[in-house]
Image (cartoon, rainbow, N blue to C red):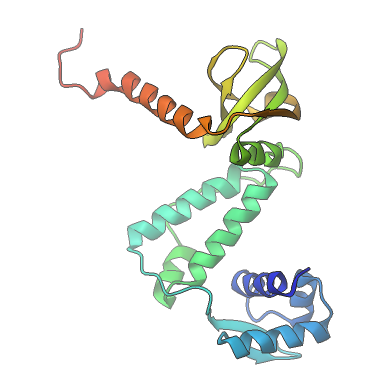
Length: 237
């Protein structure tokens, strides 16, 4: 692992693990020897990070040089905590881990009072953690969406009918659970696909760049058209 990446991982461990964190735990997290860890701690301190503690006792990050102070209102803190907890509760392993790390970064950048408010936010999603593997790994779909490349899926619909489809994955969206919004090449239309009904996922040798942004705009326009009669003040039968 490159030294810069190792130092970034060490900072993230200091942000997210309960303080004080022992040198052994930090060495395990960053995959280095304790001797290398002590050198990395010294490097971060030299760069301006305020890290309290000594070998044998543990370390506490008291000022994070990588994150400037941020101020949020209490309701903004509630919104951040609610949104990230939804992701932690319902996402696949990769996105759950990212949500936890993002929450730790935001919390570390807040003044002490706001840190306490985020820790004890009123709006939270508490759900039993699914067993490992119970939520389909969406990393291939996520990567395909970022790169704007097609994928093929073996899919079973709600009636149990099995098909193989080529889709252009546009986004992973929350609808009581995470689903994949895609352009279905077979139906030539937008479709939502449930990850738990995907029996197999394979990359396809096809790029749909730069169609993703335009397709997302088209989809949002369709949603607005469907919602317009409900928002209108015109008399309805």
